[in-house]
Length: 137
Image 1 (cartoon, rainbow, N blue to C red):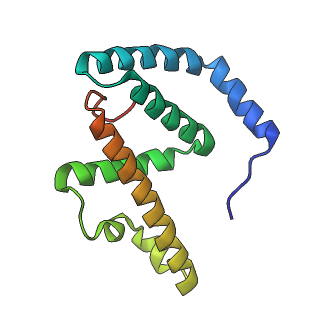
Image 2: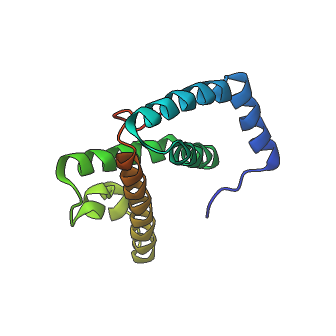
């Protein structure tokens, strides 16, 4: 089951973002990306929509694992394109071997869902060809 955050935990995370200047940095970086988009002929509204989605996803999950997973998927897609055995390559073999049959099924479904989201993000970033190599703000 997923861990549900309490309102208090969300408030602490929001306060931490304010203290660290996250939103000021975000606004500055967004303005830079918008000017790059205009120069590249890409609609600024698409850039705003894309980065708003990335930020809200990061705030909701706030996990470094998701970003590391995305970077792994991005590397595979950059080097080889879409491949037929992506789920097999992304599977943590030691973890997978320790699971029961039902848990393996859930793990495969979860991994395939994460993979599809990563491919969708990758394609969005490719359409915004001016983004940094690592796709970050």
